[in-house]
Image (cartoon, rainbow, N blue to C red; front, side, top):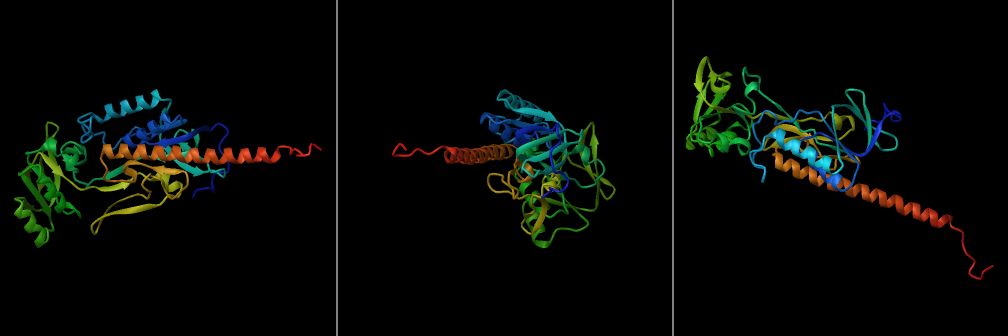
Length: 339
């Protein structure tokens, strides 16, 4: 744990009971829970949500089809209505002070301290380096069928092979369309996998994928071995890596996420409430649960917020008991005989 570089908080550091790092669904949900518990809570938000390229949030009961920016704006307003604060900014470094508070230094030099910390910084999708692919991410290039499958149902879809779970993805996406191609690349799938794809009516397209094409801002095809293969959607399997800078600074444990025999990313280790191996430090959302959709991230933030409040209540109770005992010990004794 990082205690070596900071012996005391700067004199101008602003203190809060809880600081939430990350202003997405998980962070705002945690902040709302804490604000409703009458805690002094601040959300520090870099303003770069993972789902910003997407047109809408899906699978969120009661909020189906809401644009991501609209959902977050509503969340910030709800937190503010209950007394929580929001500050744009990015954390440059984090440290644990000798008194066990957390010290955060923002990129603009602002210093903040907190008794408890909730990190909800999300993850980074590490995309294949193919020309044109990044520009279509979240629109014509997708990953999760539960997030976007309904919106592209029955359309021409291609699945980029070569990844550890690409065959599984193709079989899954077949639920949403019967016009499905599997771009196998230089290494075709093994016999059993090839048989499964064929049995489900998924056509193999051999050859190296060299890029994606777009027309009028929409994905129009995939370039394979020098030729254009028309597609409206390309499915990929990015590696998922937690945004872990704050966690690494504080010595929190990170773990590989394995699906079957394949490692698909790294995430923060935490218990069911989001508590990490570092006392006073919680996580919520994709930083710890890489495959959660927005509604799952929001639920995790609520659980973490409630757990943090309970932890603060326990600490306050310990201090109150100690103070009561100290007063009792200091009180003068009365002689029962009146002498």
